[in-house]
Image 1 (cartoon, each protein chain N blue to C red):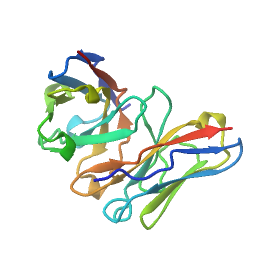
Image 2 (image 1 turned 90 degrees about the vertical axis):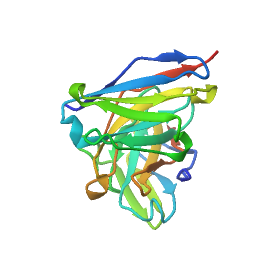
Image 3 (image 1 turned 135 degrees about the vertical axis):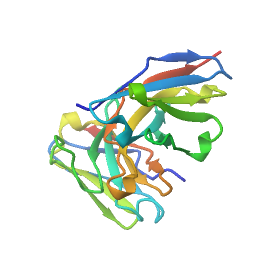
Length: 123
Length: 110
């Protein structure tokens, strides 16, 4: 069965960086894009961007341009999301989710989600 | 792009039907068939309930249905049950390989 298993909770200081991992299993890692979505406490879902594990190509929403980097290691079927220059407003649960590559030709939906990783930013 | 607009809360009694709206623009909801709905219980990851406007993934109850008219999509829950109490989010493809979410709707079963 398809599973996305994320790394554990992180506590970081303002100005630092955090790197969250998302290990995929149960399917061919390079056949589906990984999207990242975050959710601040008590708030809604916020889409951050996507990464194609086959090519390594990425796309980020403007809000996070320059601060987020999405990468992958295909040898261990793992995607990463690194967010730099952290501030208190970045305290949130970060989710990875799977979407078909070139989704416009199939379906642009996040069918499988990781369990979420809490990132807490505090001095 | 701006978030899609959802009502903050909707409530209903057990057995009733409720509908949650999701309003966007011609650049997202109105322009593509890729509207999805997610259910999220407190402390849990979102769960896909509807994709491509009106399709249900395997295992999702047929009490959940979706539709779209113009720039507004809707999720209807029929035969409301206690377990349906959760937050619901719509999302849409919004061009250039991007997605946009609604602000979320809290469903309360009275």
